[in-house]
Amino acid sequence: MELERGIHQMAHGRQPFGIPSPNVYLVQGHRAAMLIDSGYDEDEDHAARMAYINQVGGPPIMGVLVTHRHRDHAGGAVRLKRDTGAPILCHRLDREAIEQERFEGEAQVDEELQGGETFDLGGLTLEVIHAPGHTMGSVAVLVRERHALLSADTVLGVTTTLVRPGEGDLRLYVESVGKLRDIAPRVIYPGHGGPVVDPVARMEELIEHRRQREEQVLSQLAMGANTVMEIRDALYTDIPEARLAIAAEQVQSHLDKLTTEGRVTTADGVYALK
Image (tube, rainbow, N blue to C red; front, top):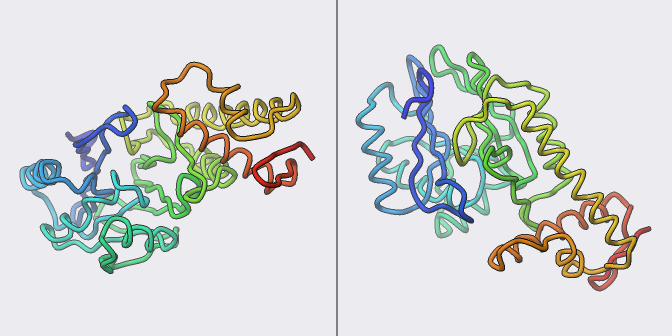
């Protein structure tokens, strides 16, 4: 559907961890268009996206800009490249993972991004913002003339963002949310769910949530809990069993941040306040 003139949202596919299906955005100016993300690599999802793109029509698509490495955002990029002729773009720090994990080792990415690039679509300008944290190569896209931010998974309205050890970095994530907050966008169009109409307040809420969780982790360490599982079990007492592994990853991400900052020490999976 068209969210506002020239900015279209397509949401199709599975709902990871119970959150809404991934969004793919079609942004159209007078001269060119850009697809932001590509959804899952599944027949029905791709067919629905292409049907919508063909129905809407408009100027040629100049690229499929993948915001980060995860399958619900990068998986369908090769199909969109094949059917639209548009090159695939992604940040250089996620390129290897995208090609290895999503494209079966094929070098399908056509252009690496650094952050700071702009694309003139004719009446609308897209600015790429490197926002590492959810993954190291995560990017957001600002539609300058509308002050609309396509935040991918860095800012969601429906839930907090998963930061997995080995894929992202919690310290960088908090910094990235702060950077996007300082842009003060009018609206956020996220990677899942509907528009965030109070974006600055939402981003402040996300930063505060991480601060509070960090304080809880520090408190548990002070009380003698000294492993990921002990801290997880103390903090996450009312979540479904299926989400316990994710909870453990979040605790690990907090401990990694605290260790990097020199506030916590670790040896053989045992943590302590410094």
